[in-house]
Image 1 (cartoon, rainbow over the protein chains, first blue to last red):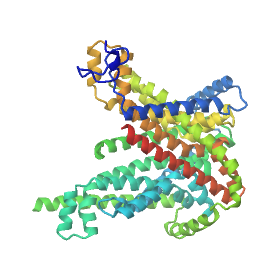
Image 2 (cartoon, rainbow over the protein chains, first blue to last red):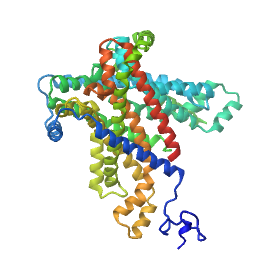
Image 3 (cartoon, one colour):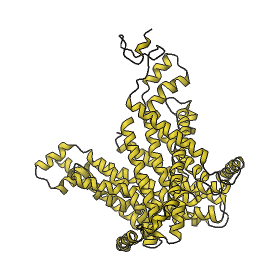
Image 4 (cartoon, rainbow over the protein chains, first blue to last red):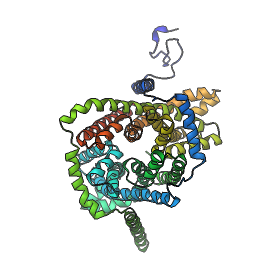
Length: 287
Length: 263
């Protein structure tokens, strides 16, 4: 057997391993990077699990309790007198309204910024600058934006919406500008050659071609904004069903109420998720 | 001619109708929550200016870095571990529940239902429920992130596995390979690059969510931020934000770099 030819191409064109069997996988650079990443992630995870602070509770008792609590939450949701059902429904609508406002204002701002961030409609410097600002917006967690704004402009709907806006804008600018960049360059060239102005190009070629895609992305963001509005309500006291969830869980310590509120959030989120998935399949071309 | 004109008229009308619906929804929402567009437009710029001045870290706040950095490290470690360990479980569930290589229609339905439930129960609810039994500890935060990530990644992996080409699987089946051999020789090699790319994305998302969970469970960078925020030391709170920004951008750049290499 040609042991010396390990890993090399033989006269028959097959690569042999050290044992002399035919190699099924070639060692490429991308494979090496992939395995390096897997190893690093695995090592970090093991290290974390070994050193993490498990608290002062007995692990197995806590696990049993947690499963019991979870079962209680899903099997017997209900109200214990801290809120009426009308209160909870009102909270749900407040969260939905905050999400809708954020989505709408975010969409308007992101549409303008998206035009300037698309490389085929703007110049490279402006596009790069906008993308850099957006990645800063995205890097600050939503909850911190909201907490900062609730001291900057006072607790209330304005602070919640302003805080939620940053991630919304960053997400939509990325989605919109990538969708604008997919426009057939021939169309733009034809319009430019016939003397169309920039805004004529935008409103005669770009917007009509991309309306359904823009609307789908906007709706998908609405789904995310609802989830964020709930989270933000809980931690920043920005109102809505999230705040009631926080009160039920950490103030009244009532698992049944947490269960009921979770079911309501779950129901809304599942409806929005199904709608968003269908929109994505229908209008957004998979890359 | 007449036909094309009516086509464009219908298009313009439906566009206008959409705009009107949008505006109505927003007017309703704004009145419902007491949001004033004009007030907000006037307040936000002033707020931003105030924020920029107050939250700017001072030289003095740099001395608090030795309480910020360990908290930041713990947040990053918890985010990585929760993403990776959730990924292992999610991948197993996604393979069993996949429509192409799964173990049946019932499993496919169950996997999707489980993914949807875990993903859509708010992370806040998970954190609050786990606080009852696990009390305030890093592990509570880990579990809350683990559960939502598990739901999210299961859904992503299900899509990835269902989209892969079935040729190699059929070839292996025809050659008499066992289920495990098919998994190891066809399913895993075809999906691992995109799975890792999802995991890296999740690490980045979890660093941000860990801040939120940290505020609730009293751990990590979220807790440090919360302490300084509540004691009006906005300069140190600003430093904590800056630390998160640096980490998130570093994560994003690393994962973009790796993604370009492996796909």
